[in-house]
Length: 225
Image (cartoon, rainbow, N blue to C red; front, side):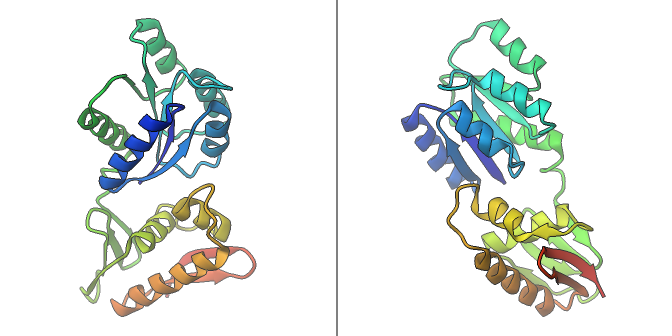
């Protein structure tokens, strides 16, 4: 799961980033409201953790603009203030939950899980297309027909999960790089090609009829023979 953490306290942001990565989240950081807004507008994130008190643009304004732009990504607001009106304003403008600083990591993780369940991400323990099944908990693919299984690496898993959640669509190389490597990643488009190749080989190994089809000049889509 890819998270965007928008927090201007760099020490806190970097500490949270390290803790969340240990919990197998992929985390991108932004340190002010404008930077956070630019990254959030890409739509590549599963959850946004958004501080209210930010330089350049406060979190409430960022949230309002995201919702005005039809970005429906779940948002967990962080605030150092406990006044009820701050919480109400955040929730009224489209926040999914809030957390008052200081907080314990376990509470943050619990709230992230709750938001994800509401969105449906955590409920989908398996994703499928044709005979291909992806176990999102174990990062394992299998075929309904051959019963063979294969473990995926992290980026192979992120790539295939993204395609399965957007099946029957053409996914561009740009979208793959942003989703798997991040908004400001220096990964080249050939990185997407390499991991598509790896994933194709594993799908072929389990004997699935599903293929990742290249759409010339655009990107990739799933197809079943």
